[in-house]
Amino acid sequence: MTKNKCTHTQLIFLILLQQLGSSIVVSLGIQAKQDAWIAILAALVGGLALLWLHIKLHQLHPDVPLTGVIRKILGKWLGWPLALLYVLYFIYVGSRVLRDLSDLLKTALLNYTPLSAISAFIMICIVYVLSHGLENLGKTGEIFGMIYILSIFSILAVLFITNVFNPDRILPVAEDPMLIVKTAYPLVYTFPYGEIILFNMLYPYVQNNQSLYKITAITMIFSGLLLSLILAVMVGVLGHEVTSRSTFPLLSSLGKVNLLYFLQRLDSLAIVILVIGGFFKIALFLMSAVIGATDLFKGEQKKLVTPIGAILFVLSQFIGANIAEHLSEGEYFVPRYLHLPMQTVIPLLLFLIGWIKKKRARSSDQIHPPPNQAAH
Image 1 (spheres, rainbow, N blue to C red):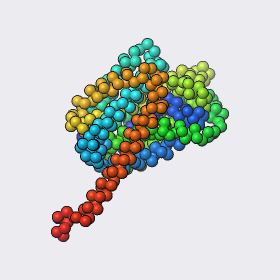
Image 2 (cartoon, rainbow, N blue to C red):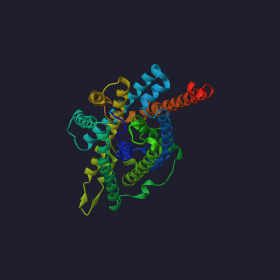
Image 3 (cartoon, rainbow, N blue to C red):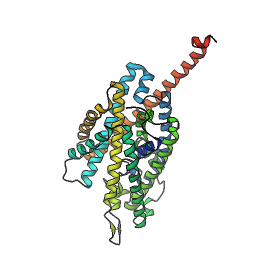
Image 4 (cartoon, one colour):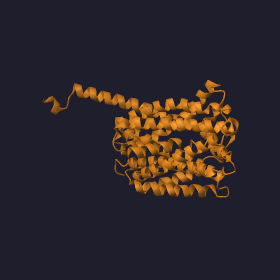
């Protein structure tokens, strides 16, 4: 894959689709009850700080993806296994998103279709798009990103126009501050904000990557505000108890809409949001894994998309015996024991080691200048 294949506009839409992705259709942060929307905003603060760390880590070696940065900082013997671990991490998280999307589609729309058939069809489409490179994914993201955002605002408008939203259901505000903090960290902090680390694999391929923090931070803030608004609306329509029990609360909220028996059955809008968001989130994790594998094994990206996509598909079929077990793992084990180390702890240690090494190298150059400088 050649460099500079992603424009700033394409990057913005890809970040939006990754951040909102599957987060927008589930009851994110509902552990904080009616204050779920506050938990999302509270986690956004930590997410922006984490983004700063990720950008600083990237800037140590801006011409290579995260897997290359790791090897440059730690060397071949320590760096290569850790870089491979990140490739496996991207595959695993992508497989979880695929399972989420397949389960929700089966529950909401395709009740009698085997889960494996749904997942296989999704992966075939994703592999086809990625086989044409990051540029193709970016252009596709621009088109479907606009449809995605338009669908979201259409849903919000309908829910307000039809008066199914009851603001009393989100009261009292900040009833339990500690519960908000416990929900925000680590759950919402790691999902979706911490997953922004996948873009450390894509930043080297962005045209004019001098304003990466500004672009990514503004997009994250927008997506965080939108997520918070949507959660507040869903709780205002259903109540926090119903929202927490619902597998697909956005779809349940739209089920309440009935304007003069004319404007009703808007399930299709929720399905559009689910499919587009899930599709691009899986595609981005798969693309990150492929870029990493290409960097480590020096293979050809196009030839690695299909086998890695197949691994992701197979893994998704064995994650959790059922949707309840799968969601339980995603709520407790994955944020604490997988996301936190991979998104925060390891990047922080890498940055500190890389920063110290660069500082020492500069000091050494000042004490012992290169021969061509010493001659002057």
